[in-house]
Image (tube, rainbow, N blue to C red; front, side, top):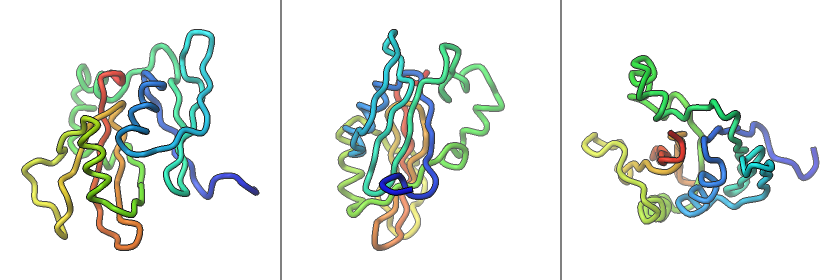
Length: 156
C-alpha cells in the first residue's frame, strides 16, 4: 500500500465527531486529513494524524452512547472504566512528553490519576475531551509512558 497508513489504524467512535476532531487537534496536536459529514452534519468519516500514526473517527448511529453516558446507567461499564486506558486505548509517541501534557492541560484536560504514584518520574496523567478513549503517550526516543484519557461532554 503506497502512501497509505502503516499497520493498524484505530477507529474511534464519538457522539459528536466534529467536536471530537476539533478537540483532538487543539489538545493533542492531531492534524485533520479528512472530515466527511452527512446532510445532517453528522461525521460519517474523519481521519487525523499524529506523526506517522493515523486514527479514524465517526459517529456510528443516532443511538450511539459514548462511554460516559453508558457508564451513567450501567454498573458493569462503570466498573470496567476504573482502568479506562485498558478498555479503549490508543498509543501515541511524542517527542516531548512534558510539552504534550502542557498542551492537553491548556486545552482543558485534567489529571486522570491525581494521587497515584507515577512510575519512572512520569509527568501527571491527563484526561479531558470527547469520548474517553485513552491515549497512552510515550516519548519518541525514550519509552516513558503517560496515559492521557480523553473525555468531553459531546461524548455523553
